[in-house]
Image (cartoon, rainbow, N blue to C red; front, side):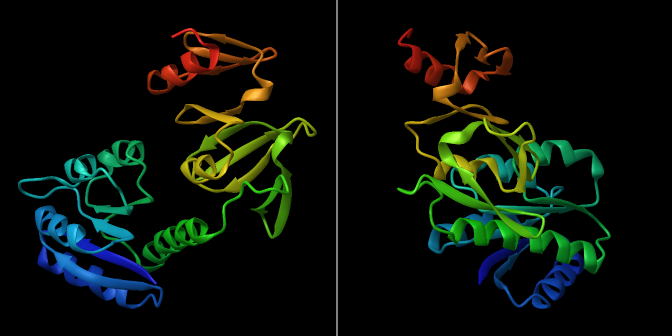
Length: 233
């Protein structure tokens, strides 16, 4: 069961949201709030898996609320404004819904959250066998850990680039999920969109990592990790 909170300062919008949530058997609405500060108090007292969140609210906006959280549950933004979509996805929200939201679009967003929730409950990918399986279309594809050259993030999907194949394996999974599950001694996050196998790194620059002739960017947040790897602190 996914424990969720609904936050919206408009009573009618909140009532509709509550009704939609009640239609999905895997959602448990813990509480409805008309402001983020009330939700903060609830989250301090009990675990929450998913937040349905409006953006434009008096006082603390939805985006400011997300930025204030140190531990973030899954978040589905529901707003009347399309202009905040890029900001929302930069904050790693699960989905972005524009009011008025149809029931099928709402269900689609919730199903996406359920997939992420179920993935987090799965056993760790990294294991003594040295392989794991990922969902690709309607099959489970076996990935040999030492065959991974690098992983590329594309919104809700990742591309797993393998030494043994010219075509990457594409699967629906957050970058954070696979990063947490890969052995930290063998893989390194260098950018919000890239994880690389340390074994395949051939050269390093201040803002780039090379795998033979392929150049991948290193963001400011991960330069210290690269410096530690090379010993050039």
